[in-house]
Length: 414
Ligand SMILES: [Ca+2]
Ligand SMILES: [Ca+2]
Image (tube, rainbow, N blue to C red; front, top):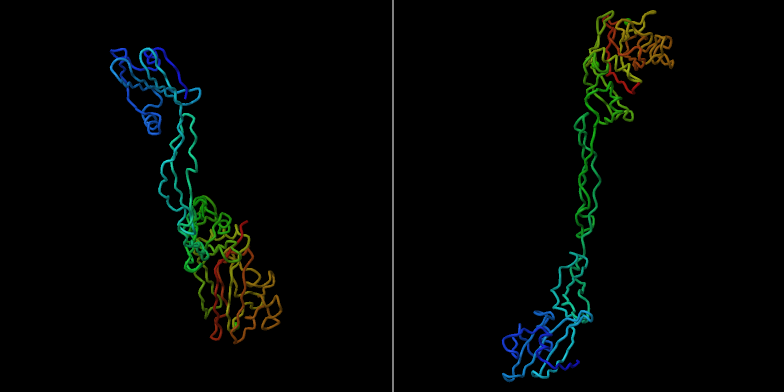
């Protein structure tokens, strides 16, 4: 506190912005705050005045005595100053008080929510500092505090998934479809603590996204494009234009999934033959013969299984093959029976020297009254597709036979 002696109260009051009223010694205060130098006064100042000027006058008598108070902010020292003057018209003493306001915390908030729902979490609460002013000290102590110990119940452990199911079959053979696989959660993997499994229970992916137009020539070509499921599929063996596309069965899983084009026909069931020196059975394929030829041409390999059961019924009679198949040229027979070696006129047993009659070329050439059979695959592409089967030597009563011809199967793309 320092004291200043003013000789002229009037001039002092002007200095401290008191408002002049009618009389020299009467001052009208903007606001009146008494006994300011205590904490209550400080709060009042804080809330309303912020060091702006207050002036009050206390007239001890109507003539000359009075007091004047004013506040100003000392921006250099960042503090509030109170000027308090007492005296009369000839002499006024002015006391200057300075003070500052320390920061004060308000009340703590209530505790917040727990940071976890299990396994032990923490809660926090906070309080707001009423900021210090005029060079006062900061609030003392932390503005937030935490405590642990809430929600200490053990946490659930995510369950383990059972294995994925197989992918569903692609619903389309081209043009893009979705296949899915699913898995289920093992809710007992961690006993009563088992929680939901983490991750998705279903997965999806694109399949057979290649275009439906610009048909493949064979199933092997479709395999190259990405077809992986066994299905009926549209192919166009002779390419764009020409003949129309056809529907065939694609076996995409056998033989390591190479893509096998399978073509059926009307002679797959057993066909008994009785009473003919020779009879020709033309095969009618599921698709036009010329498209079958194209499939053979555009495949690396083809095979066509033939089985002939015989009772006193020759395959070779003299130098002539009376039972055999007609090649793709629709007129000639090859010089071997299916399974036999080219140029031998023989059956498979002839290759190994195991024919029923070792001096003949086929089991059936034993030509006796025992049911026998010769069988094998036609694999020479020059002979495929088979045009017809020819059954011979069944004309007499004890002679008969029956044949079975499998589906034509072609694989590999040339
Ligand atoms: Ca075509
Ligand atoms: Ca015979």
